[in-house]
Length: 224
Image (cartoon, rainbow, N blue to C red; front, side, top):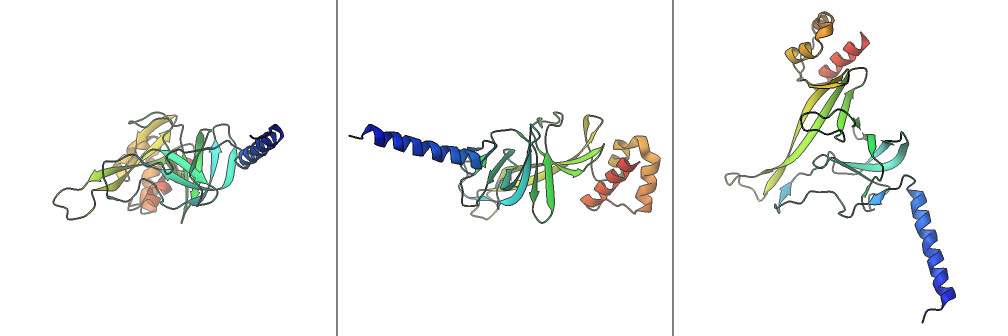
């Protein structure tokens, strides 16, 4: 039989450990019961992953309350739109108890994401977009990653492969619009400054061969 004084000591020690753990994670994270948040699948051999980066990378977040938190490692699951974190890669993944409105991952280049944009084309207000260009008019990039089943003609031991797509959006005057990296789409989206935009395209020899060209145009538009 356990004596009462001994039981009381055990309970007090347990309380201290729990409180210490809670203080370490000051914004009340909880353990994701499923570990890495990978969607259930009927496939046994899958190529690729649902994460924007497979490894844990340094990052920082901003909560809905406006609080910033740094010094953690982040993983973003594109397929489930779920952000998780750890303080040590050996730890179990954690998910945030508070809504995260913005986060930054420091990879080869810094990538910043945000949500709380209007519902549009099946994307909810909780959907994260990469913020490619900041300003009064924003250039956003929304990623999707899904499993494509391999056909019988594709000689491989892989049952399915993750495929990624990305769509650019303009967030302007509180509204979302799709934009393609080409002259016609840009002229339509930025029609109120069409003369200046056309001159800029010619002067800077913008060909939209890469994302940076599109970003330059939006940055120029915001400077007008």
